[in-house]
Image 1 (cartoon, rainbow, N blue to C red):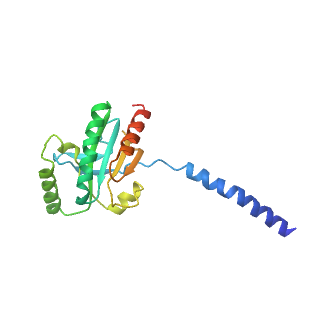
Image 2: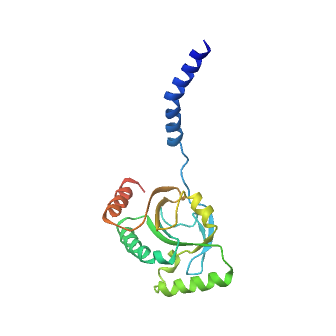
Image 3: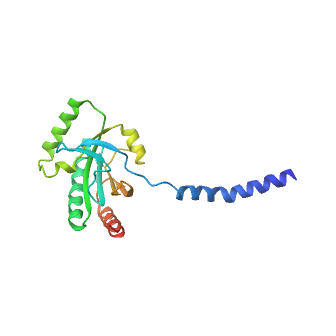
Length: 182
């Protein structure tokens, strides 16, 4: 009798176990951009995600200066998308470890030199954070490539990609923007 009960338990676990895992995976809470206070290159204080200006926001995150060429490609795409989609705003968020004030001043001054158009400076917000915690909050496993997030006004991540901009990613972001009513 005992072995029959054990066999029934194993059979139920074999059937219900995977279903429970699938249900748990589908019930994941949405990922939200973590609350971070920083200063844009225009030297204005920015509380993220609260101060994001768009109904939808395209956030281009970089983790190393070597990713600058990819950031520039995504920036051009973001500018184009913003012209086509009312309510969309883009931001470039270089992510670095927490640093002292002198280092941050030097780093931000260097970025102002790289982005010579002062009209862009309010949209470039360097983040000096605990990178591991920040990546964990956004479920970003690695920082070896640019990460692009589409968020709503409250910072909920609606779509994400990483790496080089290509035609497939351009088409996918376009589909996402058309699918989301704003």
